[in-house]
Image 1 (cartoon, rainbow, N blue to C red):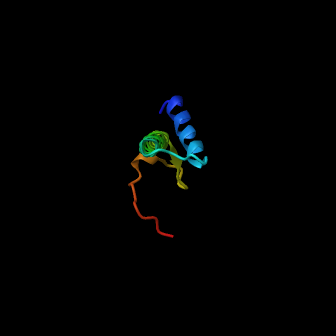
Image 2 (image 1 turned 90 degrees about the vertical axis):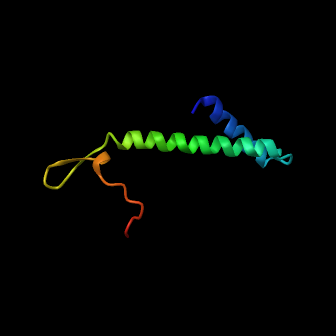
Image 3 (image 1 turned 60 degrees about the horizontal axis):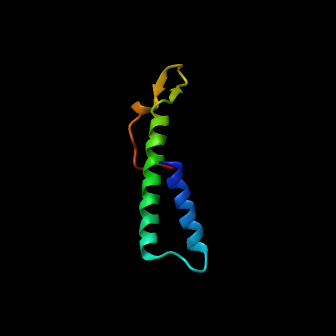
Length: 75
């Protein structure tokens, strides 16, 4: 995601909080840019996590990318 797009997200946010608000086309643009930002963030986070190694108690090393992806976290 480019700095220009992030700047536009912020502009649209500020305008949405102003008395004039956003036009329907600006609301659509805002939603599109936000989705794009979230997807870029997720891709970046996955890239970082794929390079993480975890040292186990027994001294072995587990690569984070080799850990199964679990949708539900048990608490």
